[in-house]
Length: 271
Length: 280
Image 1 (cartoon, chains in turn purple, yellow):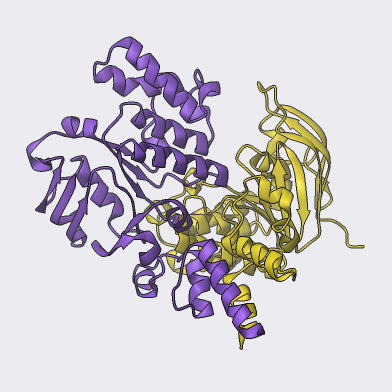
Image 2 (cartoon, one colour):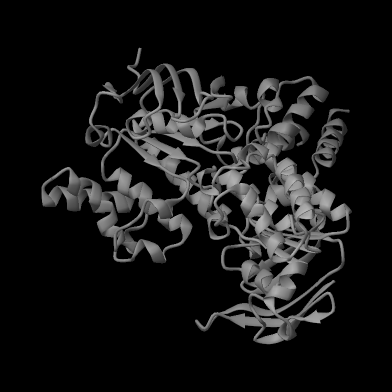
């Protein structure tokens, strides 16, 4: 479980990147954090593995106050996958990239081999095993950086903008992987601008704006709230927009619901 | 018939040290002033196609190149880069990799300076490019201190200063937040209205399909669909490719089947006003 209590953080420029943030994440939840650029999303998740420490308030991860432990300890519990894979990747080959953390954590060689094999297959990277990560495409690099974290099996997985540069098939695959990990008991937190991805795959959404949490709840309820979408200056899902424009009483992000609603409207009038 | 501004004939290409061709027998034509959306799953050849349009392929990459690419009457394989650069500009996914000058103004002036144009002409082109893109207020800034969206606009202004007839953009919004992405895409639409031919690679079809004249889909190095977006996005074949079909298209398709009337909407505005029109 993660508890963020009244956390404030400033990079020293006179602006509070986080301004009294409260957030509770239960074990094995799957949630998204969305919000405009500079809303504080990345600053918040950097608090979860101790990369940043709160200047006011506290962060408790699985019962441990992040002020009272090291990044190295937290890193095994909280795996953070950064937005730009170039900031994470460094090894000569994809295989070495994947085994790096495992070796550092002192796992036995056969266990390392097993996990690397799993990751190569799960992320369709088997063909690139001996390639330098830097020769891969943007989308492929992204998959390597994600695989390198999932390999060491952290309990909490945080992904910063995992869908950039991914096509729709890869997004669906990513969602399948995340859902599967989540069903196995992992807590998965996705920081993203990709509102359609959230609408399609993530059950809970936390909306941030200017260092604060302005909405938090079930995705299908939050993303159809015009006030929230406008306050956070993120583009709403296409179906929420459609709902508003049609003046639906119950706006929805679900295609089945929308089709049903429209059919009812048309039927009503054609009688 | 209008003379094509881009004419690609029988283009096949394989990167050096690769065994699999990235493009296979591609034929493509664009008329001056067209706005063409290029899409398709990752690895389908769209980036390679973009690189072929400004001669980066094969001139800088080498590899096995067959067929011809002619832009504004010039063949890319027999025309010097500085000539091509005045016809066709290429914008990449990550603007950080392109920008290197200390100020935005210098960045935008770099191209025309290298053409050894008169000073006044350079100044005029820089002013104009910054103005069109809407970043005149940033000209004293260092590109490094700008946001991703602003950097992408600097990269676009730098190309416009070369007065190209064709702009090719390879996922220019991939690293941008939705609001910046929308503003870059609206800029493309404005440039296109001013007569620039735009070839735009983009995954997020819900943001662009209504802006373009034509939609070209690549798969496995070949063009598998080419036509107006209202035909291409509604074709079953394209749907099966795993291209991200916008939600409004999905809903319209299902409604079509139910009410037995072919609907071809691309935006929530279009679909909403249709429904409201029927109901009121």
